[in-house]
Amino acid sequence: MLDLLLRVLAFGSGAFLVFSTILAAIRSFVLPRNESVLINNWVFTIIRRAFSVVAAQKRTYAGRDHIMAMYAPVGLVMLPVVWLILLSVGYTGVLWAVGEGSLLHSYILSSTSLLTLGSEKASTTIGSIFTFSEATFGLLLATLLISYLPTMYQAFTRRELVVARLELRCGTDRTATELIIWLNRTGSLADDGPQWEQWEEWFVEIEETHTSLPILSFFRSPQPGRSWVTAASIILDAAAVIISAVDQPRDPQMELCFKAGCIAINRINRYFQHSAHSEPNNLITEANPVEDPTRRDFFQTYEQLREAAMPVRADREAAWQEYQELRMRYADAVQYLARLTMSPDLKAIGGNR
Image 1: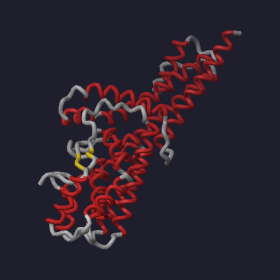
Image 2 (image 1 turned 120 degrees about the vertical axis):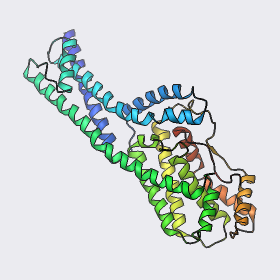
Image 3 (image 1 turned 135 degrees about the vertical axis):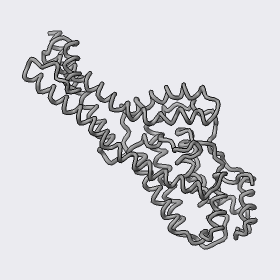
Image 4 (image 1 turned 120 degrees about the horizontal axis):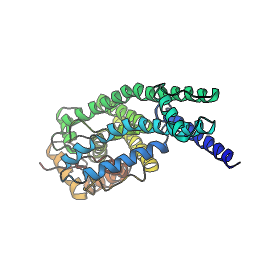
């Protein structure tokens, strides 16, 4: 009676583990919706903790960045490995429950079936059915990852193309002020609809890709000083400064871009706040990668814009108040994502001239 009970429990537990693993793979790579997958979260969190221990030994940002550049690729490769291990363990319980011999023999049979080696054969018909299904699921998991790798790297390439182009426009200081001055110098400040439209599309795309494929958020830019989070912050800060401080007619395309950016950043932030709230923070030695601008920073930016012969609002205090209100819509999300992804230091506005 006890043996029967143990076999029933082993079969139920194994079947549940197999079902959960397959469902996790489908939700990760097939379901077009931003769902938090518990198995994936555990894998990425454990790997992140291991990388954080190593990266914390580095004294410079460049050293930590070099270590963390491997985090996302390693995590992505380890994910199907963990899925395959869970499948093997689950089918071990199932095969033992249907009478395929000892646990050791059931594990060997499960592993050879999963890897389609064929060195072990099931002794029963029902055992053969389960081994064939396991081989099918093993191939399915490997195929899912291989087929989605090009999709992920295409999304990464499109993201980084905008990041690199933005760096050319905002100068070596990488500040919103430099971006605004460049827009004014090129004569596109008041009429640069295509540029804001391109950034709007970029925000829409990263919202979709970085929540449905969240590991993309941790793929680092090819250049250590770049980051998609800091790029998003620069665009949003530039739009907020223009709206609040520059005296010109309202630009609907720029406001749409600002709205799209706020929505994208906050939705990505909510996804990680919900699904990765246990993400370790001890990796980051900088307490605040994105500085919160003070009144003095804003007034410095205001003066730089005026010196660049740009039309600015006469009331600096009113401009500062409006800028604060606009920045509140995205600042918390940007700062959380900057810490989470270990983005490089960034001044929100200003910068030394």
